Length: 353
Image 1 (spheres, rainbow, N blue to C red):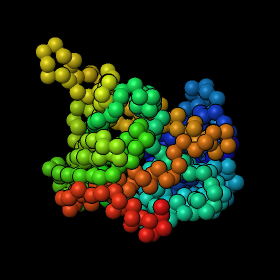
Image 2: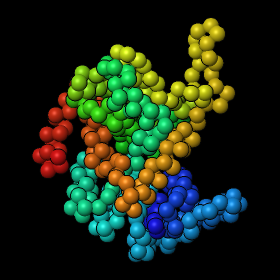
Image 3: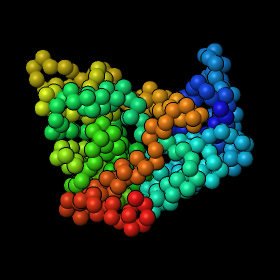
Image 4: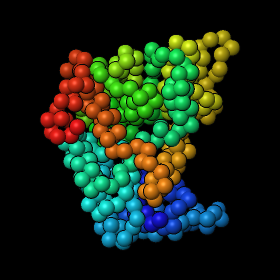
């Protein structure tokens, strides 16, 4: 398979290197708005393969994003800046190409819906990048929930904490803390439980750097979600977890409890005498914590694009997660609980559901 790879930034660099070593990928053609950056990435991946002596796909740089689409590739992977996602998804659909795209499709509902309509009209595959679905801990937790081993779930506690804030210039492009970070927890809750969120109540604070307030964003947020079976979910996120990168999900049922993300590198210490101390080498960031999950989801995309497996995360999944994030943003700004029916009614009026 010849894959067109779009985007040579931080996550694009990681994904491109992973794809170059993925079974079924014969060639990787990298395109970026900055042709020089694409060339540097292609050369680096080729050099690493030579040094490591590993069998890899042929990797080369294209002169532009347009050149990638003109090259007759079999599928595309979109890892560009968020603002370009929806347009590239539409372009891939119109070209009849299977596409993988990092979340989100877009930062607002109208652009998300427009892109999904194009994909569905074309009948092409769109796999969204919610990597937690491919993490070993999350997959084990899903099996425990779905098998009934934990009994009736009554409480879920989700945590997403960055070790340090992103650059100030990232915030206006991110959609804000809730859309950027907590959207992963919203997707994970739906995927783990098979249930839908019916109501949200959210709060946020911006007591850190001034650039959060300047961007009309928050650096810490908390949401209470109610699922359609009455299960209560708390989801918190912060940009200021100096102890390290912390992503955990606790699932509490009548017969048992399970924690995703509790391991030797989880960045916390016990306050109890004789309890565990803080790890010497806590998780530093999402690429380190979820490296294996990212590689697994890209391998799944290659199989799905080849027609060998079903799509593990269709575009509509991103829409559902975004709707929950939008409801939380509305709740945070208005100070009231928001029923998901409000958002779904608005989307239905736009012909989206």
